Image 1: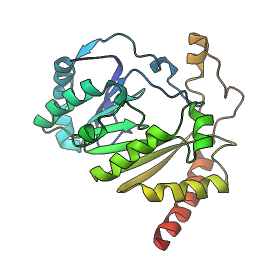
Image 2 (image 1 turned 135 degrees about the vertical axis):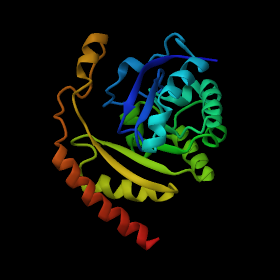
Image 3 (image 1 turned 120 degrees about the vertical axis):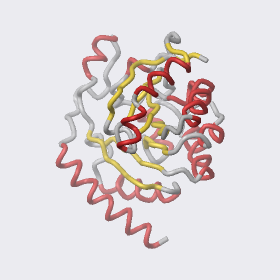
Length: 242
């Protein structure tokens, strides 16, 4: 089995617990306004076999064991290369490697099967209603909702990630809507707000792609932290009422 891989980060510290090998798979159906990896939209040619990647991962196994780390599959959208993902996850489970899946939940099916193999899901929330989701991603929310239903049935632990774009998510209405929306997702262990930044802007110029948020200022990190603290109070308040 082969995969189209964009890059491999061998000592990732932010994409799951411990030290992790992060494998970024090409291909994505979403066109998020704030995407900082537009070079991964296109699938590209296959450049790694399952066995080649497993061999790379196993070189770092001693670090995983000492730091409760493992492998994270990210993208792009890793669920678009589902057959490869299933193949490599089965082999990594045989080696006792912790597997995290960083996804927006917009793949091509076989969700139950892949969720039975992973240990943690990092779920990227794009928006909480159909209209906002379509405006942000250019795609309907239905597939993401389908994935969430499968995720709930799997009972796997979930870390939520929400990019905060100034003028879109940094307001009380969105915070309350997000807090309500997340009530339907089981086993949430962590919620993380990520500030919108300009780090990927040069890629749009290189690829000659229009950058729809080129005039939007970066989200201040401290303001984002304060916003998350405010959100958590709202979230816990709603949770306690349910």
